Amino acid sequence: MPKVYATLPVLNESENIPYLIEDFRAQNFPESVLVVCVNQPEEWWDNPGKAEVCRDNALTLGYLNSLTGTEIVVIDRSSRGKGWIGRKHGVGWARKIAMDEASRMAADNDIIVSMDADTRYPANYFSSVVRQMNNYPAATGLSVPYYHKLTGEEDADRCILRYELYMRNYNLNMMRINNPYAFSAIGSGMACSAFNYRRVGGLSPKMSGEDFYFIQKLRKAGPVIVDCDAVIHPAARFSDRVYFGTGPAMIRGRGGNWDSYPVYPMTAFDRVKKTYDLFEKLLVFDVETPMDAFIRSISEGKPFWEPLRKNSPVLPAFQKACMQRLDGLRILQYLKTVNGFFPGSNEDRINELLFLLSSSGKLSETPALIASFSNDPINRLDAIRNVLFEAERAMQKEKQMV
Image (cartoon, rainbow, N blue to C red; front, side):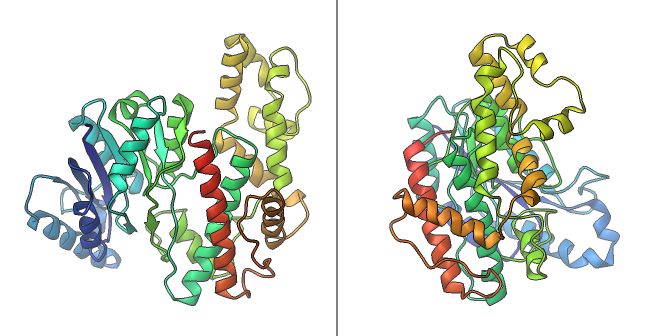
C-alpha cells in the first residue's frame, strides 16, 4: 500500500487552514503526511502594506505548530530571516519546496498530491487518487475533476461561472478533438508517484502557472489520468495571490475585462486536430497545415519539421516529437493568436458547443442558451455550467487517460 504525501503552499490563509486540516484528517486512507510550506518574500517584513499578510502567516505557523501528531511537516519560509530573497518567490516556489520535500521522504511507489488551502476535499479523495494510480500503472500523473461551489454573492458567482465556462469550453473541445493535452491543470488537484515526480525533474517553479507546466511535463513522459471518483471544490474568491488563474481572472472580470479568457471557437480547435492528423504525412515531406502561420512565427523562419524528421525518423517517434513540440502551451498560444479572426461572441461560442453536445447525445438535458454573461440570471449560467460539467465528466470517464 503506497503512502500519500499531500503538499500545500500557504500564504495569507489562516482562515482556510483549519478547514484544510479538517479535510486532511477526515481522509479514509490509512497512511498520509501533509507537507506545508508557509511562505512570503523576506522584504515584506519591512513593507507596511504587507504587515497584515506577515501577521496572518505567523498565525498560520502558530496554528500548525500547535497541532499534535507527526503526520504534518511544516516548512517555514515566512518568519523573519526565513522568507524568500530576490526573484525566487511565489506559489510556484512554495509548491516546489513542499513537493521536493515530499519526494525526499517518499518511496518510489508513494503518491505525491498537490493541494491548495482554499479548496475543500471529500473524505475519499486520497483513496480515489491511489485507486486510479493503481488502476493505470502506465500513467505518469492524474488531473483531478473540479467544481466551484457558488457563494451566494452575485459578483463572485457571475465571475466564477464565466471563468469556469471558459475552462469547460477549452477542455471539452480538447477532448472532442482527442488531443493528448486534454486535461485541466489546477494546482489544487494533481497527483503523481514519487518515482514519476523525480523522473520528470520535479516541479519547475513559476510565479504562476506552475501547475500547467508540471502536468504538461508529466504528459510528455506518458499518459495522464483524467478521471477520479472524488471531485474537489476550489474556492470562488477574488484573490491576487498569483498573477493569473482563478482569483486574478475574477478580479479583472469584475471590472469587465475577460480579454485573457476568451471562449475559443470550435473551428480553431478543429484546425489543431487537422494539424495533428497530418503528422504521418509530415514524416515524409512538408505539407500545408492549418497552423502554418503560427508555426512560422514560433520557429522564427527556421525549419520546423525537418529537424524532427532527422532526430525521429520512425513514425511513432516522429509523432511523439511533434506532439511534444506542438504542446499544450503552443496550442493555447495558437488559440489566443487566431481567436480574433473568427466570428461570433463568447456567448455564441458557448451556445455552439451546447448545440453540438446536445445533437450528439452527450447532454442529458439542454439548458436555455446564453444571451449575455453580464446580464443573464445566475441560475441560467449555473445550469449551463452544470450540463457542461456533466458532459466533461462523462467524456473523462469514457477516456480515463489522455
